Image 1 (spheres, rainbow, N blue to C red):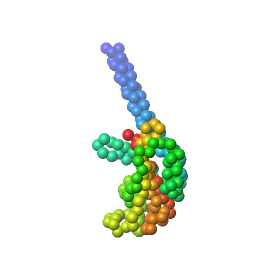
Image 2: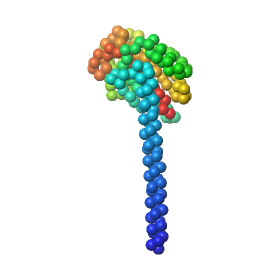
Image 3: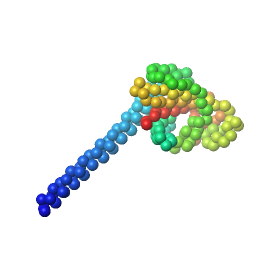
Image 4: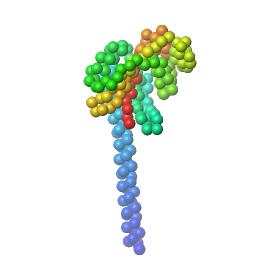
Amino acid sequence: MMHNLNHWRVNLLLVFCILATLLLVCVITVVWRDYSQREKIYLTAEKLGYDPALKIAQVNRCFDVFSHCYLFLYYKTDLTQEELKHKIDTLSWDISNEMEVDGYEIFTDINYGTTSRLTIDGTDELGDRSQLPNFDGYRWRLRDSAGGRWTITYFPLSSHPGSIALDGSKLEHNIVAIQYQTR
């Protein structure tokens, strides 16, 4: 009887060790994947003129029932759209499309997706956009050599006729938003 009880305890301990090891492997895999994805977006951003001192925010977001998840990096830049386009071209990635976008979407992205606040003429509520000057951004959708999906959006805020502030300080830069699909 004592032998069976000891055998049962050894088997239980063995099962516990196996489960703990599997859990540890899963945690390490998730942490490594997250680190790898963050490293990938920062290395790409550096090729596009990113300076860590000009970082606005880095956030993870998932959308829809299919859990399409993305890693976003927002940063300030002095680059013009043409200079950024040249840097994007040096990546030698496949560009699936390029298009103008509503530049005011950066206010929604920053104000509702990060802890930072962008304001225009003293307000972060865009309300009736027809009352504001026209403002366009520019977007590139790309695939890297490994098939990763990227979206790079440029917002030329430095030349905007309205007074734009980031967290209460006048913004004298443009903003680049890099989006990398993580799943």
